[in-house]
Length: 324
Ligand SMILES: [Zn+2]
Image 1 (cartoon, rainbow, N blue to C red):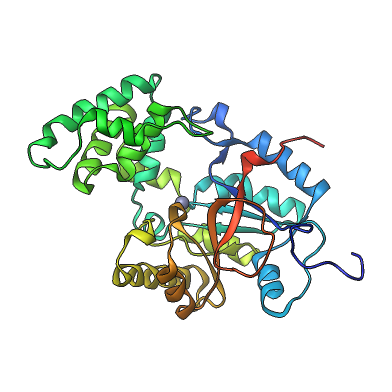
Image 2 (image 1 turned 180 degrees about the vertical axis):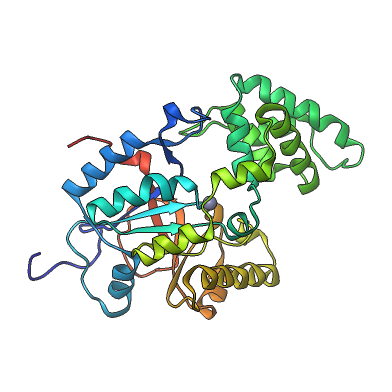
């Protein structure tokens, strides 16, 4: 390392990479899950090993707090949602390379073996061949709810508002995702998601949850081995949609979960905002709860450490997957 490493700036950015599913997709039960294959993950680790210096959140905190320099071309690897993939596929590969990873499990899913809404939707989509037909089936299931929920917009209005393709998904898939995530009253979207899960996936959600997520002993094992475990909320909610009181409950439960994982009160911990949702109230409450860093889903390099509760990240798909 050179004697003087420049601070983080547009000319010397920090790269934080965000991962979700990482698995041997071709040989998995749901090969259509939108995830990263093990082979591509290994290729990306090769690329990162050649072009970056992997560091941890503790290094970042020292840079924020006391200006301790990060290594040149710093990179932090983050893994959201507490998937068992992270224990079976990611953890051994990071250990083999001497890399630290930062993991953000959704607490309730781990502790109570419940399937998050967002993952129900992923599994529904992974079990469907025809996204246009799925969107129609969703609207057919919605129709009977209109009597009790007259505030729900017409099908055409819903499509106009929510069926907008993005860089990863077509318009029908985004329509299904957005409507089932937050585009309908909670009881309606939950009932429709459960029915589509039953019809298309056909597995008891609590069984699926046990397959999908790590458990507490696995998280404790990774923490003991030097991996960093941070907060990702209790119920994986958009915190910016909650009252301050409800946000406080979520944060308190997140701290309680980290205490269960670590065996002591978390100190200087990192929050990874579920779905990227936060506001100024969230940040104020986190400061009071011993949280010192916040990870968003805004897609960018980190070019300044002035806003440590609003750190942007790149998606894994924004980086190459070259093998060495
Ligand atoms: Zn998440």
